[in-house]
Image 1 (cartoon, rainbow, N blue to C red):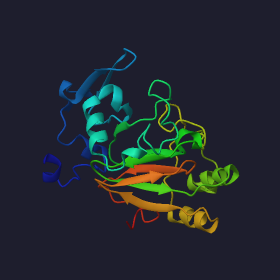
Image 2: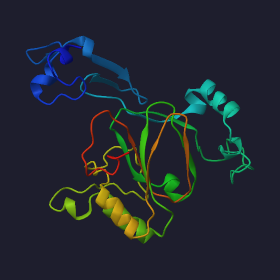
Image 3: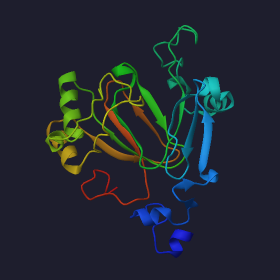
Length: 242
């Protein structure tokens, strides 16, 4: 409200001065009301400024941490045979303790954040993604040999446009897309990158997953998610017209 009254965008301040409007900052000190402290899974205490930083909650094990939500999902999901251990799962003859954990997982992520291109289970498993709130911008390619996947990642992460800059050190084929230390954040694909992938017959799918919708991703298909933001996208962005 204070930013609107001052003619500044409430969520996307343009200048450092706009950033300070409506905040209780005096002599470079932040009011305690802006600080959130918490204990991590490994027993370490962290503090973040809730206006400058956001939490990205990923890979939360529903079975272990939210059993009521896990039970509700299994009771009401329209395709129960596709769930881990279901009749369409190749490991349905193995009990839960005998097979690797395959979900379901829960994610709470802020607008404009995104997951690096990756293939689930290093290309060995299918996956399903349900959007509960907000919207997800998605780019997904067809299944193809590894040499074409490497070429596609080069194109989608900026290609020659990143010459002279630090390229992402993340391995999109066998890395962990939510891990730490992944290097510089890669570019989100442009219209030109998507068009080049089409010309290479990589069949890129560019779409928005909305609340209540589910997308099934076959094993070995490279894909990336970005959380829809109210901020306008540049015209070159592959999702700008959607």
